[in-house]
Image (tube, rainbow, N blue to C red; front, side):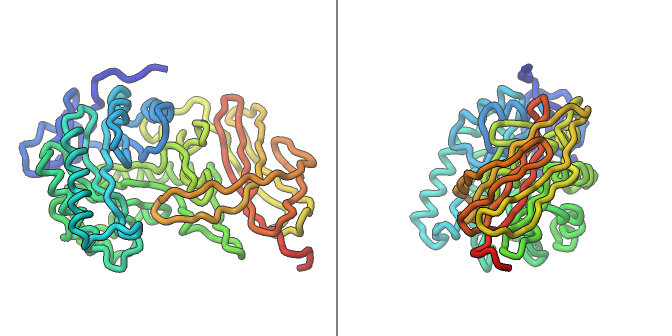
Length: 424
């Protein structure tokens, strides 16, 4: 493994926005706020990186894939910036802000003062860090609020505090991509915020520039999370289980979305979600890597978009299937996967049954991992499985993990229901 040296990558934001810039060949990475004297910009490209949640090994993999920037959701631990800096990565540093849905009171002066004091301490501690690129003040704090403006105005106030302490790095607020009406509220609500971060999923990414124009937003925009079809958007089985895309389908989304966004001048940064692994509806829905760090077709597609062609790509999944959607208790269940390695070499497949997730949260809040269900395997090979289904009625998923000789993985899962009785 070769780590990047101390020289910083030559990337910059479009000069028309007068945003934090690094001149081609510059090593200091100095950033300036809008209106300040900007360094000469000879290269204008988007921030190239990912939203991150993982250990140092995953961070190393991110740098090796060609990333130049990483979005960290919480920089309370300065060691995370140290690790990023040693790998040549710049950091969009997350400053957590209390969410009203978690009980944070926007009308409580003591709570507001304590939050501001915490943020002031973090900014003073980290503002001189050489890896620091920008501040992200909060993340989707408006979730579940009928009127998002009070939460957004508090974020704007805190952004002003951050700017007063550190005028050399821009501030970003991050919101969920919901309705056009909500986007329109952002057009002039938050003057102390330099960058508007929007978490965008599935097909909404392809008409984002048009929606920004319709909403009257002319501020530079960062796609702070970019992901394929989310669990809140997906089609559902009759009992309510959302249907997850395969890793191959997700990779195809990134291959389409990243070039589309690269062509948009107002989009000054894009962060695929999530470099790492995270339980959110399933253990594989949003992770670009597996929990054990295995690379996938999604991480391959992103590396290719960043100019790092992958010589030996992850396996692809051409199809999946299960004998039925509903079964009687202890009924024999058959399922299969049609998968291929890039060179035709043999694959191996792991088959696991888990209970359907019930600890479902909003906005990426932590969820409990549903238990694995032991089942009696009657037959299993790389392409098919036959097992005795669970005895307990309820909702389940069959998770399929296909691995090649290099340890790269492809993933899919199939929701199924065990009925109360065998009668239809």
